[in-house]
Length: 217
Image (cartoon, rainbow, N blue to C red):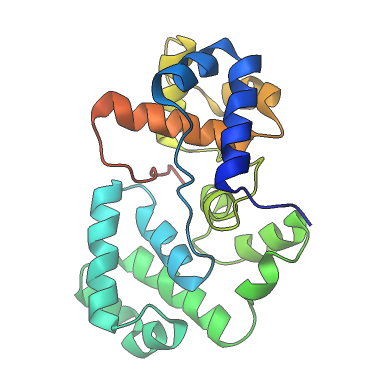
């Protein structure tokens, strides 16, 4: 079983990346090791990730807090009880209400067991999550990177990382997915650490709040 990132291994990974990539070395010298940005594995985190798709993190955080207050607790049974109509009544889009309700149904019925995901091989766990409507590759990558704390995940489709790579690597435009694949090969087995370093750069450069990033799924 892969050992999850810890504060100590995150620091070690950042130091190693700084020695093999001069651009990351400059980031590390300027900003130090990035935060772990750890999330609790489970249903509530997947709901948050769904809400973060294609919107700002501030907007997603506000919507999640509204949802949590409305339900009292972010659980599959309470999402099912509220129904898609209830979720839409507090401001979720029709699409995201459907995604959240569908995820709740799969877990409530036992079709999806989140407790088993981290014990499965990554390809098996990812396949199970990707079978849920609304969980695309970015969402699953973020879950593996932040909730399961896998050390070598690169979230394809992340807009902030594409821009951060443009700035750090001096590219003429945000890094394409193919460019990201090429640029990040050198960083294995610490790509999750590199992503955190680049998110930290992105946020620092904009004086932004230390949340995660949004996606282009």
